Each structure stands twice: as C-alpha cells, then as structure tokens.
Length: 147
Image 1 (cartoon, rainbow, N blue to C red):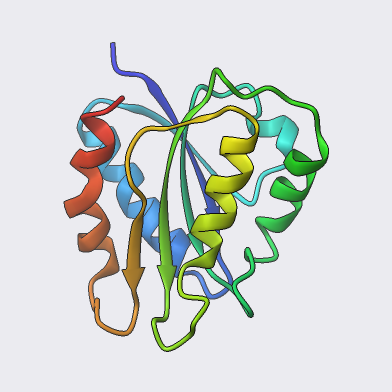
Image 2: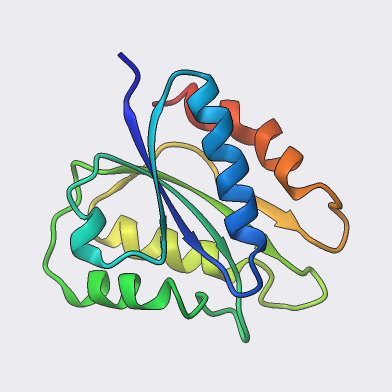
C-alpha cells in the first residue's frame, strides 16, 4: 500500500497552488492517497506522516500570507515531528536576492522540530521555467522514490 501524502501549499498569486494540484493528480495516478491543503492550520496537518510543501516566496523572502500562520504556530509549539518526513517545492524569481527563501524557512522550521527531509528541494525559477507544473513533475521521482 502506498503512503498517504499531505500536500501543503503557500501561494500569493496561485502559481504554487497550480503546481500542487498538478502534482497531486500525478501522485493519485501513481496510486498514492493524497490530501491537499491550501494554507492549513497546524492542527489540520500536525499528525500527518508525509508532507510535500509547495510554496512561493513572497516579499523580502517571506512565506506567503496563507502559509505563514502554519509555520508561526509550528515554530512557537513544542511539537516533536520526528514522525514526519517531508520535501519542499519552491517557486521564486531569481531577479531577487531572496530567491526561494521560503524553501529555506520551511526546511529550517521542520528540521528544528526533528522532521526528516527526504530529498533536496526543487527550486523553480519562474523567470526561466515557463512550465512550472512539468518541472515539478520531472522532479517528482526524487520524492516518490524516497518515501
């Protein structure tokens, strides 16, 4: 039986949501059970065993407004997430020196709570990558082969 995958998105303009929805459909085609959350509360996802976080970077390297409350709550909690395995897909603009900083913030928060990163993050440059959904799909085996 395939593991259940919790997809969590953080998006300002919708790009990360589109990528997450595309990835979710591909995972389901491969027989995975999935649940997609757009900016969930910590209690909605804290007991999940496997997260795939898809996020854009907002402003000066910040998490999008719909994802910030989740990670603020996580950072303020005393939760031990050693049961959690995760990976991150980030969308960003390489014109900014804070390119994909949200990926770093997500990874740092989760690693600080003892979660286990199962593969290197995908950092999609929206300036040079016209098909972000295909880019994420091409990366997906890095995630699925490690779960």
